[in-house]
Image (cartoon, rainbow, N blue to C red; front, side, top):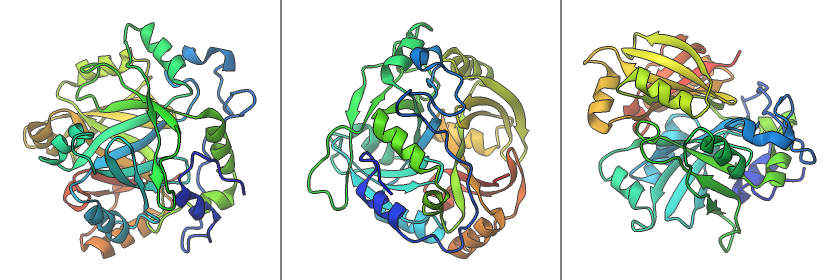
Length: 352
């Protein structure tokens, strides 16, 4: 199986390795792009007009960054206690070290610390006071198409930054593997999102590889996690925040109430995933406490699981805490509180 060059070396080894014992359920296939035409399978956007939508036909919800005070402790938490398999370590030229947990639908969780405080001053300022989910990333077909789309909505995105990562086994920092770019400060409450545009041909090749059930099985986890489904964004004013998210071209979906969190919520589509804006319905809710401590930002994430029962058992054994099921927004779910996850609510929901 040919591995795309943008994929980290350690992850290549995973795809070539044996199947994960106990993780036999198939996953939903990632949206595939045709490298020759630039057209994603099932994507109605004409390849010649990628600037007609925010994402340009890409997958959208890509990964979430969880800033931690100790990467070694976070590996113990996520790998040993929570049951995420195959931690993949990397080092970035912008002063960040990370350990990523890749999923079979091409999404992933990133735990990160700084290795150079000056280069990653924004990260150091956060982890001096907090741990938790700091940003969510949406993949887009191209930086140029998305910035053109935003410009027509009077949103001036920043210039793209070149990105790459050096993983275990690489002697030097590789050349560019992606571009990232940001919206202006204040465009969205708490500035929780940014965009990534992967080098096109390797990205298409990777998504094509994941059409193979054998490749997907090799990226499954002991807790049966299959991939990101939603990011929970705590906001102080639900109506104002909803207008802001609609203004950048994300489709508004259903509204909901979450009694356990004391939340009123509004869903926005984000390609293959969703963004959930959540506001406190009472001063005593976990959301109200989060907002008092951090202000608007990422409160939690939802992951699909092949077996919620297995996920509950693995996490109960690893943490010593009970994981009762409940009817979540996307199906039968369990919810792991932030004190067990380095500061972020973590929900696993049954894959249909």
